[in-house]
Image (cartoon, rainbow over the protein chains, first blue to last red):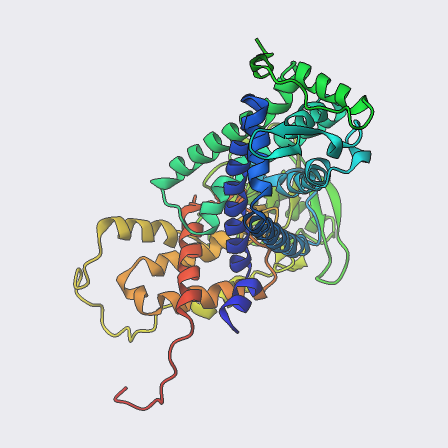
Length: 264
Length: 258
C-alpha cells in the first residue's frame, strides 16, 4: 500500500487527517473573524476589505478550494470512523452515557453536523446572496461608492440588515455556541490525535483549547449581538431607503463618522 | 444487607440474551462483589437453575480476568480497582445493581457475563514482544535506562489486559490497551529494534479486529483499574505516524552471517 492508502486505511491515519484538516479550518476561523471584525470600523473599512478580496480571484478561489478540501476530508475521516465505531458495539448497554467521558466529546458529530448546515446557510446567505433565505430581500442590490473603486457591494449594510432579522441572528448564535463546544474538544483532541502530547503539554493544550474556543465565540457572536443592539442601524436604514428609490436616483447612503459609533 | 441484581443472561454466543432479576440472600457487606455472585450462584444451583457465568481468576486485581459492567461502569463504582476488589460495602442495602458483560463486536459473548477477549491476544501476537535470546539473566544495569523512562514504562506495563477500556469507550476502542502495550516496550532500550514495526503491526491488528476508533472521550482512563494515562495513546499516535512515514524496510537479499 502507498502511504496515502495506508493513511486512509488505518483508523489512526484518518484521525491524523481529521486533526490536520481541523487545524486548517481553525486557522481559517481566525482569519475570517479578523476580516469580519472590521464591521466595528467605519463602513468603508469592511467594504474596502470585501472589494480587496473580490479583486484577488486567484487567492480567494485558492483559499475556497483549500477549505472545501479540508471540509471534505474532515467529513470523510470522521464519518467513516464514526460508522466503524458504531459497528464496533452492536448491542448497547442498558445504562446511559459513557462513564467518565468528557461531555463535549460525546456531541462532536451533532455539533459538527449543525455547524456544517450553518456553513451551507452562511454561504447561501452572504456569499451566494440568495434572496429567498435571508428574511430581507435581494442583498445584491445594496451598493455603495468607494473612493478608489467606484460602485461596490455594500457589505456593511448587508451584514447589518442581515442580522436585523431575528431568526437569522438566533441561528447564527446557536451555530456559534455549537462551534464553541466543537472547538472546546477539537482544539485539544487534534494534538492528541497527532501524538503531540505528554504530561507537561496536556494542561497547556487544554488551556489553549479553552482560550481559543472562547475567544472565537466572543469574537463571532459580538457581531450579530452588536447589530441587534443597534450597530449601524441608521446607515442600514438609509441603505434600505436607497433601494426603494426609482432606478437612477439611487445613491450611496451618506456616511458620517457617527455610523460606526451608533452603539454610543 | 440484601440487594437485587439485574443480570444479563445469554445461553451461548448465538442466542439472544436478556436481563433477569435475582434477589440476594442476606449478604455480608465485606464480601467482594465476586463472592456475592458466588453466593447467588450457590442459591441458583440448589434451586436447579443455571448459575450465572462470569470470568474470574486471581481475585486480587492483577490477572485481568474479571470483567463486569456494574451499573454502567466497568469494574464497579471505584477508581483504580478491578471488579474482584470491589466490595459489597460500596452498595446500599436494597440497591438494584445492573450487571452486564463487556459489550463490543471484537469481544463476542460466550455465555452470560463471559466474553471472548482473544482479540487482545492476537494484537499482542502481532508485535507485543521483543525478539531476543533470553539465556541467563543479564547483569543488572548492564543496559542503562533513565529512571523516568523506567517509571513510565512501568506505568504502561501495569496494564492487565482486562478490556475495561474497550467496555467503557463509547466507540468500543482498544486504543488504551494497545497504547499501553506499545509504550511499555517502546520506552525501553530493549524495545527499540522493533519499535516502529511493532506499533504498525499492533495498530493494524487492532483495526482488523473491529474495534472502534479513539475520539478522546477519556472514558478508558477513567475506568482503567491500573489508571493508565491517555498520554500513552498520544505516544502511540506519534510512533505510528513515524512508522507510516518511515515506510517498509528496504528489501535485502538475505543470507549474511546471521
